[in-house]
Length: 187
Image (cartoon, rainbow, N blue to C red):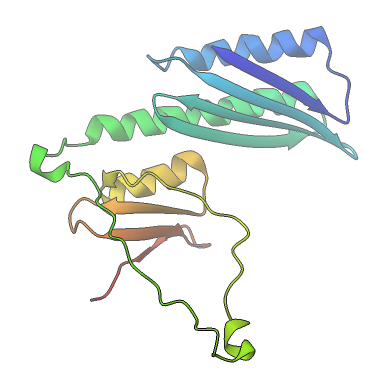
């Protein structure tokens, strides 16, 4: 297991490091593949914040907790991650495997965009968006239910995925009322 512990605005003690390592071993028993853990402990005013990100079995699991005591924050975030992992494993146990025909690779299509000719006005050219960050996503085919589990597990706001039922790119997002919204292309 690769473990990275960082402290922000605080001095990291050996006792705190061993406390984190001890409780992370508890989580390691859930996984069959190597687990990487990134731990960030920080102090902001009177709040002690523990943030842990686990990378195991192809999943990223994230938790963050704060309290008045750093040891209590670490214990809380470990318990939170343990609940997330157990919930995920329970859902996987209920999952029905897909047929081989449904496990198709996502094949992106190339689209050519027309470039502006030098004769076009500057006002039209100024409307071009300025991209400051670009990410490449792996488009693994999954069902809407699997995408919802992924949002719960990773605590993300949305997931872009290739829908295994329709073979189209979809976006599933978490709503404030605890439900989900699904964006599908319309042709």
